[in-house]
Length: 385
Figure (cartoon, rainbow, N blue to C red):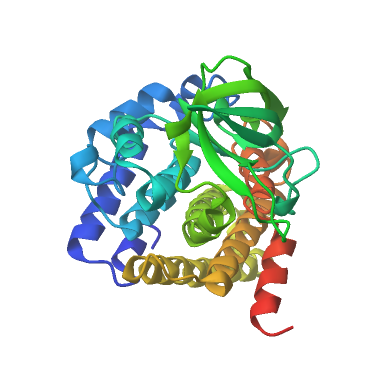
């Protein structure tokens, strides 16, 4: 049943083959007994060597035009890839945020920026984006990090928090305040800062999930004027234009994680015996697993529906649908992992087994990219409330 699900939900034969190829790669190259080695005992969830090997297959450049080294695929293709690599536990944690920045480059980047940065990604490179600050999280319009123009350079000063995989990225797209306006969200711009820029400090933060996010400090960091993405003062508009992509990207990753937690739980309850029978034969567990299986199918349909809507018209804003898909999948991932820990008992709590890692990964998915509470606020607003 698990292996047959790719044939469902309206996938073409070519898409089914694509999913099968990713699944085969993950089973072969990211097997459970290799994960500790690939991730430095699960402290580093992005393996650059593995990313480069995946890039050689053309999968890292799915949403990148051929002229920039990509495979010119669709956003829907990328969603399939995200779900399957998350389910297969491929340690390429930086790919999701990279894909978010690629979307911004495709929409607003200059030819020079695309030529340099998209080509890096197509070869397995990582990009990052910095929005949150010590005093600006869900309230993005409260950003204080500043950029000022001096001749042919931008000079950036300020701090950023919770910047996913900045320590792995060749460039970080920094959202900063370059002007003022009548509204708080006006005057924002987005500027690329290379990792080696003088005055740019990246400090990884040790978290429940390992070192996957960082604090950034910019002390009069100077970058060329051409590092500005799009137009000056258009940062808010550019951020809003990418919300569909960002939230569906995070949703696809959460869906893959949810499926992995479910798969591991199902396998466990089939082989674990108590009172002379498999624990999965008890109705209390059967009903919970049946509900999770149903919710996974519903979530997958939602993810793929919104991905298709995005491909149909990349300029269309989908605030309700994008928030719904992010809310549904991340909360489901958390629930699948929590149920997995409960059903596995002590084994679910032990570091030796994967379920506790699934739970740690799932919990943060309801926080980054807009908390579940923010998603509910947006959905309620679209309902006229």
